Amino acid sequence: MCVLPSESTLPVQIKLIRKYLKLKIMEDNFTFKNHKQERDHVYDLMKRTIVHGESHSALMLGPRGSGKTTLINSVLHQLSMEVDLTSDAIVVKLNGLLHHDDKVALKSITAQMQLENAVGDRVFGTFAENLSFLLSCLQTGADRKCKSMLFLLEEFDMFCHSGRTQNLLYNLFDITHSKQSPMCVLGITNRLDVMELLEKRVKSRFSHRHIFLFPNEESGEMISPIDNFKQVLLWLLSMPVLKAVDSPRKKKGKGRKKSIQTSESMDVDTTENAYMISDKVLSKCKVAGNEFSGLDSSFVEDWNAHIYSLVQDDVVTDAVEKFCYYTVNEQIFRNVLFQLICQVSPSKPYIEASEMSAAIDKCVAPEHRVRQLQSLSILELSLVIAMKHGMEVFDGQPMNFEMVLHRYTKFANANSSTQSVPRPVVLKAFEHLQSLEIILPVRNTDSIYNSGDTTTSRVQKEYKLFTLAVPIEDINEAVKTFKALPTEISHWYNNSII
Image 1 (cartoon, one colour):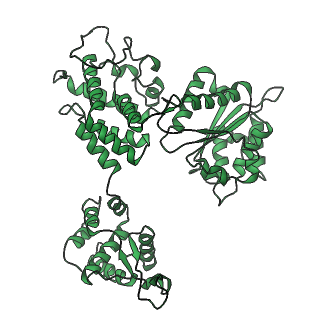
Image 2: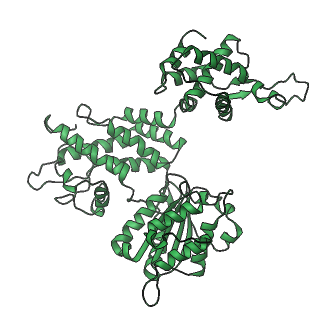
């Protein structure tokens, strides 16, 4: 049986535990588990670039949530403790979603190299000239040695998009190929076919070194996804037991799983306590390590015992198994745990198995059509409502854009608070509903053309017939739970048909 602190200290204990676990779940992107061989490979490449001045290039591939970015952060954190990373190397991080063209990428590279003053108002003819100038600015000493460079390219496949040239990749790989300067270029992507997107000139300068991160792998062996997520659950929700010097207390209860003990303070290396977050996470979040020294070790042990029993619960096992059917993304699982921690309070100090099952059900098995309808703009949802009312009037007969526009315009004119929207904008919103397959064109089997023909290919787009592809029940739920829905539209939907 769990022993709670007194009513006066319980709110403080809950607040500290909640804050500590939130930091561990959301902010700890340095602690990396499993994939030891792959991590050692990346560590070896980066260290040889920094220490020995070698040049390397590699691709890290794995599904989203498999830990690619966390692995990189873990390696950089380890290297920062072994070498002077700030003076011996420069880490440049680029993202294919942000640095969408060469100019934006060069501007970010220049800023991360802190060479804005050196570039000034200079004008360069090509991307290669600009990059060469940046590297020459880093060369120092009589032998003109250059600092080691670590280029980390997140969303690597976006740099290979067919709509743009691959000058950035070509020049980076060319430097590593010709060994002009010590550089390690590491691409990170979730696309296994990314090599097919590369131009021939880029492929010729790439080392073709691939590092694969597969989920549910431990010590080189594949483990059950359920066991993997149960381990993650135990690690993320367990607290380090910190014994105070002045008030040692005896453990209470029997059959409780013992947590790894630490010595006297929070300033202990993470290897001494499997449940402790690193000091770098605390410093990044500007949290003092001694802030959690007020935790009651007896209550922390009871908390850990409860978490251990939670992991063994059949209800939680079934919920985790359901989660694994939908996704193996650890970040989504962390979001679920974060929601559970936010619900902990002095009146409900422990997490129940039913709460975890409900949170997982809400996360991975929602009504996707309802979520899609709730993601629409107010105009698009209004067109759906207009089409629903029109089909009710005409006994389920399909409608075209002109008919929907007429009903929407009638509603907008009857409500002075509703902003009038130009016809082209309404047509664009109607086409967006079609692209989302919320409305679908009607197949005309009685057409004089072939039986597979549709009316959409023979008439103007304003007069093509469409029908709703989502059930009325989903529209009801979407309107009912739609956030910030104007009152007029809600009244229009729930009352008499205009």
